[in-house]
Length: 478
Image (cartoon, rainbow, N blue to C red; front, side, top):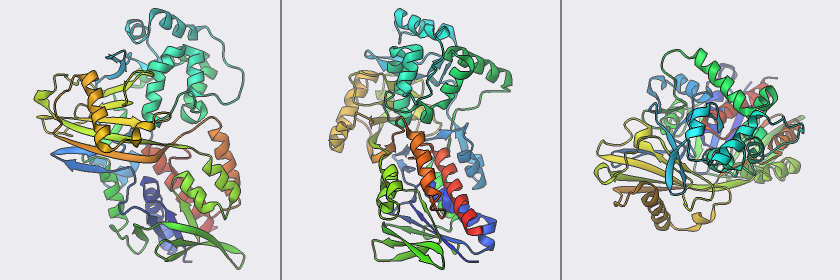
C-alpha cells in the first residue's frame, strides 16, 4: 500500500511524530510518507538555542525531566547520548520573600516536606505556619472524589503559607499557572496517591525519601537533563534525521505555510482529508496529526467536528516572556551559588522566577560573565507583557537590583516572547480529555498531540507525538 500522513505543527511534538512515522519499519516497507507543515520559517517551536556573545542562550525550555524517559531516549536514538548533561549538583533554589532570598527547605518533594529539621529552621514560614503545616500529620483524608485545585489541596493539608511560598511558586515556574485554578489530578496526581495511601503527605514524602535512599547507588542522578549545545540540538538532530530542512522521500518538511482549511474527502467509504494551505497548495492525507495549540486545532476542526472543536477551544492558554541578560562577573557582587529563585505570592516583583544559567549548567557562559534568565507573565500576570521590550528589560533590571543587588549594565540582553504558549490544566481538564477521546473515536485517522493535552514538558510532548503517529499507523495498517 501507499499512504500519506499530514502533520500540522513543527514544534517538538510534530517533529517527534514525523520521526516516528518516517523511521518506522512498517511505514517504510509499505511506502507510507508524511508531510509536516509549520507556519513559522523555523522548526522546533519553543525549543530555540542561540549563541550570543560567547554564551549559550535558551529562548524557551532549557531542560527536561530525567525521570520521564522519552526525551533522553530520543536523544540517544539520534546519537546524542554522549551529549546529555545534568544540572550542576548540590545547588539550592531560593524563594524571594519579603525582600530576601531564602533557600527552599531541604527534602521538599513536590512542595511537601520530607524532613522535619529543615522545615523547623526555614524562615519562609512563621512558627504558627509551621504548626499549621504539621497538622497534616493528623488530618483525615478527603472523602470527596471531585477534582480539586492544587492550591485547595495543599492549603487543606499544609496551610496557606505553604501554597504562597512553596507550592505556588513551583507551579508558576512549571505551568505559568495559578495554584488555585490548576487541577491537582492533571498536574500532580502523585499527591492524591500519597493522601490515599498514607493519609499524611508528610509521612508519604518521608517514606518516599527512605525508599529512594535505600535504592540509591553512587552519586545522585540529576533531576533535569539538557544537551551540551542546548535543547536546540535535539531539534537539529530530528530535522537531520528527517532529511534536512526540506525533508526526504519519506518526510517532507514545509515551513512558512499555514493550514487554513481542513476538509474531509470520502471515497469508496474511506475518509481522507484535504489540507488547504495559505499558498493555495492542497495536501491530500489518509491520516492527520494535529500538534498545533488546542485553540488552533479547534479552528481547523470547527467545520468538521464542532463538538470536538468546542472542547479544544475551552482549553485556556497564557502568555509568557523570558529575558536573558549577561553581566560581567566582576560587576556582580552576589555569589550566585545555586540554580536561581522563584517568587513568593504577593512579593512586589514583576518577574516570576530567575534562573542563574551560568551556575545551573556547565559552560553556558565564559568564566568572566554570568548569565541570568528571568521570566515574566503567567496566569493573572499577563498585563506586563503589553509593555515593549525596552520596558520589560527595565522592569527585569529593577527586580534584579532589589533581589541580587545587580546595578551594572548588561553586556547583552535577549527578549523572547511566547504569546498564548502555556496551556492551563484547570479543574476538569482530565474530564475534558476523556470527552475529547470520545469524539476522536469517530475520527480514527485523526490524532491530537501537544502540550495542551497530556503534559507540557519536552518528554510528554515527545511521547504524545509518538503515540499520535502510532494511532495513525494502526489505522492505516488495519
